[in-house]
Length: 163
Image (cartoon, rainbow, N blue to C red; front, side, top):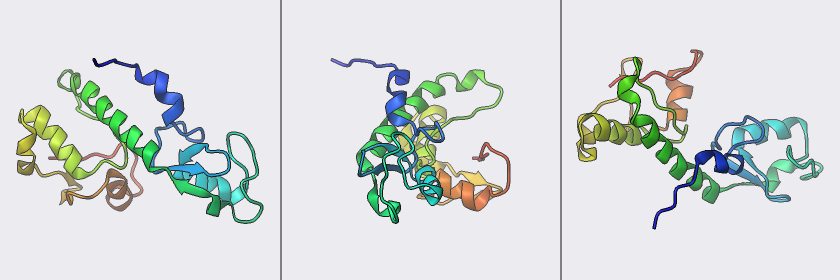
């Protein structure tokens, strides 16, 4: 039996308290177990040595040694983001401009499979699709974060890709 849960009921558990977005490279403070995006937490710890949520002192001089990547939390976010992609895809045909919102850790292969499933009516046809940014073919293992940083630098969001 499948039980459906509204994503908004889980948002407080899978969003960063600093940037208020879904976790990207989920990182947990080992002293109090609060989780944040890695980049948000590292930036916070450059100026402070306390947890942004509970203000407990992480470590007086080396707080970065007391944080760790939270693979389980990141996997949960990836699974929920995938559900979001499916929800958004049902309304893509009604929009003047097609777009999807997904994790920065999604790869080009993830996007190719998504497009193949929705446009070519078969995920197995994803190898027939090329995805480009600035007329440059993107590698299958590139994450959207990597593409954004290396190919879309100094441009306004959102990242625009062509196929």
